[in-house]
Image 1 (cartoon, rainbow, N blue to C red):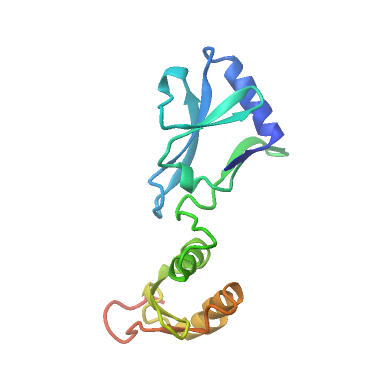
Image 2: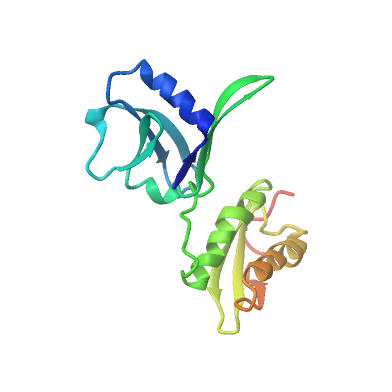
Length: 192
């Protein structure tokens, strides 16, 4: 679930030496599954461990994860990096904002996961987003754009050269194309 590098384990062990006996670390996600998700690490005294918490054993300490954060910390990595600017602890949790789906989940869920975890973060740089509205029996993903993408002059290029190519490459034999149902001439328009 969570990978903690040897350097980070050594760092945590040194920090925990100065804490009361039995103290571990807690890894958590605040607002999991939302765009506002934030990951964190804190001390976890022995009396703060809940029965539903998951314990992960590392060298010299346990990492404790609450049940709600668990699915959002799949594939998380904690490292302790030292470079010319100094030392810092890094926590990468690629699934914090979007719960990872299984490979055998329905196609709609898997497509939406790729959009939420990889495509929407790129579109968000321009104030946009896209959502899968449905999948047709012919394997066409019906998409709707919002935010800065609504009315954008580059939306067709984004759809065909970016989103469609990525999705068709990811879901070979399952998807046959994508279609935009956004009414770009109506409603709020992009500010570009």
